[in-house]
Image (cartoon, rainbow, N blue to C red):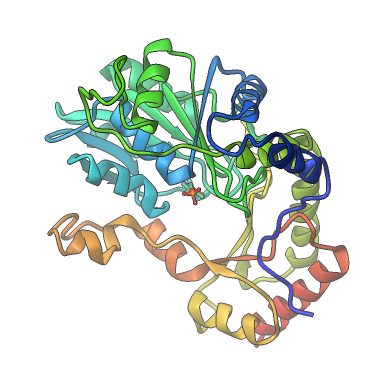
Length: 369
Ligand SMILES: *Cc1c(COP(=O)(O)O)cnc(C)c1O
């Protein structure tokens, strides 16, 4: 039996709430589950407002629009992240300014200050794979230079930084509910904020900036609305977030136990001063002693029926930005190394201990040559 890379668990109240949508006829974004999901998700993360949107990338787009970021502005972000981050900034006409990652695979916050210019509007920070970015230095910089923070917490439902929920740090914080995330709505996303005006701007960006008088528009937005059916799923998923996080922690700890003696691979950091890893995915990085890269590793494990994914590909190495002449000559050695040597193992909530043993055995065999 193949072991898939990241499958959700849908055996709580998902069915019940979805049937309710059909029986009541509330299937669009006007339905009652939307408000409930927004409120409960925001409350769980300790925020005042939740704005549900169609996916996590859309949440970033809306956040950038809401902050009024545009032509001539710069936004500092990690190079090692998903395209959604840089795409949202680029589409708004602004410029992503990149920073290398550190041993946690998150943006190296010590390198941010040197990148700040008079054009810098915001820092977009992204919590990567299971450990949060070290927030305190970022918050201090934002305060010192009067910068906004967009916190991409798409992988971090249920994680905390010094005990405070991830998703509670940004002027705007964003989440994804794609099926491989800790909470899924099939496709979906959410923006969180404590700021009434910013929440209103996000709602506008989500809904074409419909004005008070319908069909008269002062600004251009998108249709980024979530449906009531998606919110129904999300609500059922949210009820079980704590168990999901516990399950992910078990998966991470068990993989580490099985792989820790292998001298050829770098494993995720389990503890930092500010958080314990929640292993959204369990990533490993091939050390120099391994004579092949992540593409080859994923191919070989795939042949054995084991689903894996290569790590993100860096923003400064993206063909789409090279064609624009962006980031020419820029190098970020840590990010370049892990993008070529890192990949993640099956990490879904339904994974069994027996499957993890099988995966670890295949990995050990592969890298021990
Ligand atoms: C998944 C993810 C997104 C995008 O979310 P979608 O719902 O797939 O659009 C954005 N940022 C990060 C860090 C992600 O992991």
